[in-house]
Length: 141
Image (cartoon, rainbow, N blue to C red; front, side, top):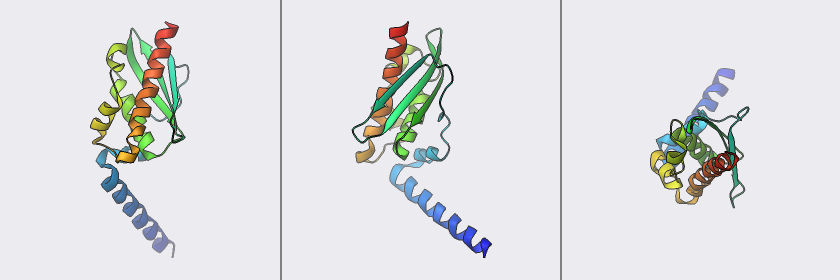
């Protein structure tokens, strides 16, 4: 009985995963295990934006010698907000502050392979949160 239930649940999960990949592309599978999803202790900068949809994205940065050494995020948003935030962090790590300031929503969308049109705002929200963090760091500096 339990084996049958486990198999049923496994099949349902696989169908959900397949549907998500079909709708959002292969890169969106990162929402299962985003590499940068966590709050950061003692960040050098934090940027937070809330979208019209109600999603909140907070980006944390550690910056040494004008280079982003570490980035992480927290979001209350949907899967596209998670993957967009994760990609914003990934794109910024190792970049100078100036280089990271050029990362925009279109860069995130391109690297993700796109999102459904009604979810593209998530990439722009993630880039805005990154820009807010960089601006806050520059203001402190």
